Length: 154
Image (cartoon, rainbow, N blue to C red; front, side):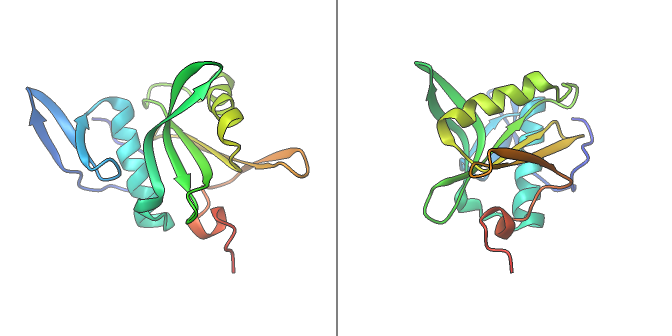
């Protein structure tokens, strides 16, 4: 798998039914390793180990209904009351993070109304903060830590 611009870690990997699989600590099961899943597991590790995101407040592959179709958010970050705070969308490292990719996550946000949208292909990371009261948005220089995301800045 490719080297990513995320902290290194040692994921649990094993072969299941002849296919390499990686353990997803959020879903508590092994899943097939795809380039996108490789990015997800590295990014989730980064959020937990380096940004203070509680593992128990992350959900992977969260189903939503959008225009009478079922979609899946790659990762949703929740506050302690289980209200969604952020949607994270992952792409394989070779997939460029374009406005089209950003529109995908923005469509998901029509359902969840979160204040943060995060995109990562493992090489580039984009974070956007939405201010619903002001009707504005701002692209951030870095991914906020969990306390900032949850509005618990000191």
